[in-house]
Image 1 (cartoon, rainbow, N blue to C red):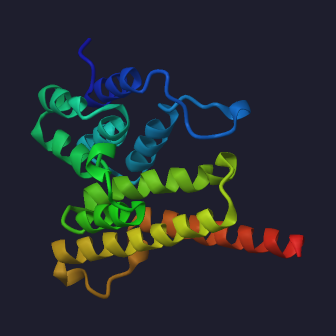
Image 2 (image 1 turned 60 degrees about the vertical axis):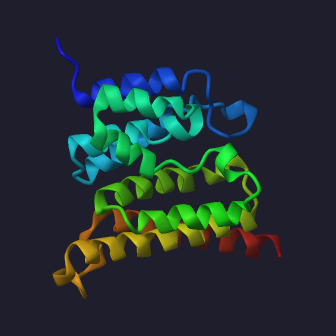
Length: 202
């Protein structure tokens, strides 16, 4: 039986990320493939297209497994999927050389402004899964707040892209977009949790 696009993308990502683990304490070593699988499941729950689900599964392959995967994805999955994966990939270490990490992140987020709601929604799912993993990764409070700020910036980017695609939406309800509802709720929950933990320590 011929595999679906989602199955083919999952198998490719599984092989590419083989031997990689999520950044977390040794006692909680989680195979990296769990992350893109969760991202893809969120995109699917939000009503994402088959293409978007495949991109979600492949979104970290070029960035974390090597630029050579771009051309492989291009040949196996086509120009649209390869292009979307490329847009979601941060610059490689070679391209980052000599540039502050802050500059690289801001430039990456700015680039998302010139994409589509579909692309940005995948990035929101990626950020949402990372937000939910911060505690296990042992991040300090300062780093968590910084990441939460970037998540809120991502919401604004998404809404800006939606408005550009559909100017008639201006003034529309952001809550009509499930990805915005979910990440906004998670950001608020984590900020409140950090606040409570800080008060307990004082």
